Image (cartoon, rainbow, N blue to C red; front, side, top):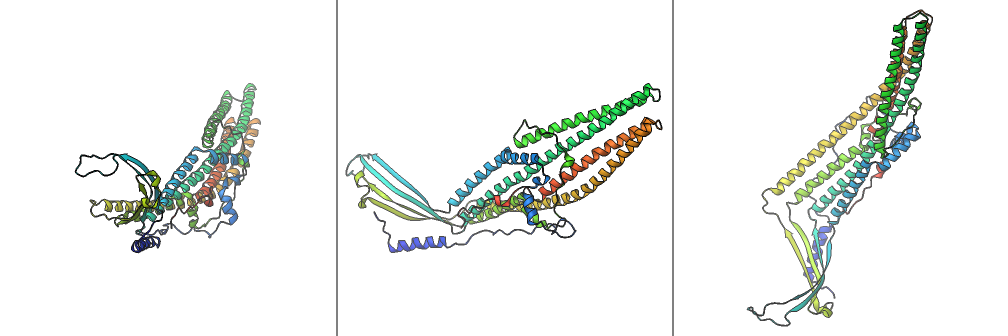
Length: 483
């Protein structure tokens, strides 16, 4: 069977298809990235840039701590974390929706077939000719194609693609946050390990002082008060050790949750032995924050909202669709595929909204309001990112200075404690001087460990604030029939 169209029909069909494919007017605003309302660079210092080596290191910044156990924990979390798996599933959902939206730009063709046996009344007004009941067989193809004159379908596809990218950046944002959560919890455990080590050393010193005080009491050269005061120091240090072990267990449990290994046990390590990674220079351009996945996610949400305005405005214009059928119909099955049985139709459907009670206008206003919301959210995300980087740069600088002072103070208090113990043993002073020196040294050693922890965690915060911990090239950018 061959389908024959008259010249006028052929011209009409060709003209409509050509107009559609030529790229007719697209209704709605075209996206343009807004100017960020943040300073050009993070600090007033000398302008700096990240080298290519630093940019690559930033993607896996936790490896700069040179700790194989930390690397293993981060890798496990990135492979198994439940929140991350949920984000992957949301990407799959958005991907399917984007493909569905892209398919609306293409023609729809369906195949039909039927076989019917029916009987009509013979007592009606009109006589019945031929067989009664009779059989009718039909087979054919139905096709329809909406001509996207106003860009409604293209705008909807643009919004769907932006939403897909937003979910992909959301997944990368989970990756981005997850690596810092694992690292911070690991550093907390290492800090507690260091504090326990200091506590153990202080406890040994306190126990020695307690034994000495008891001997001096027995020798009649010291009072029982000295012994009780020394015993109090021992008890206090043991209580501190129990609290530190409790905190370590909680951090270990949190790491187990992040890595989905609820029975996770972390062997003791040394925080003070972990290297201090080199951090980026001050005066970095604020444009670096555009590499953060949360910023990119916010921008894609803005792009989607912008495209939805076009969808809402295009609804005011007529929708035009080509429809057609081609097939065969016969009362005899063996004649169904013969030329006389062929049937076909070609049509044009036009739907123009005339009255809808303001529904379309309300939808346009909703889309516009949503676009304003995403714009405000985008600017807020940029400003939050700028603040986080500025805070992290300040913290890393200040904590490094504090750590240097804390180390100096620890050495000084250690010397004072040694002198006080020697003076007490020689009988030149009371035990109160030893207690005071020991308390100052305990506080100084704990402060030194805390300063080290603060410095390393501030470094983690800086790497995270700069968008480290994910690879921009990992986000695929499918087109989905956007043209």
